[in-house]
Image (cartoon, rainbow, N blue to C red; front, side):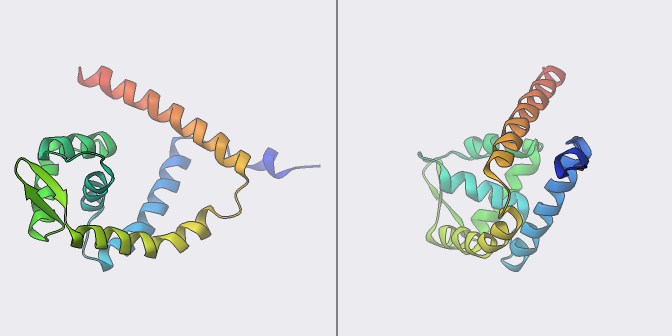
Length: 150
């Protein structure tokens, strides 16, 4: 007798990429309706979820760590968020504005039911196993990047 576990595809880089881009595609549809790019959303999230005020360099570093993007490509993203008044300046720091927090909340509210449909019904033990594998892959890939850029 064949079980779902024995016929399920083995996780690999292609499967991870396909899952990432499928989920990101859904998110980008929502972001586009709100006039945001993926990179803008990542930067706004970093500003909103930080416990302390962030300098532009702090935010650039956080976005670079998340997206592995060139820091020179991230600075214009912060400028765009400032121009949209989703971030504001407070001395040397950037802070999310009320409009930025509202935008972030609106995107979250719109994506929540979609996320529930995508992730819903997956057994907790499967999610835990996938989480462990993804954490290990991330750790190893980050180590490879660090070794190649040192």
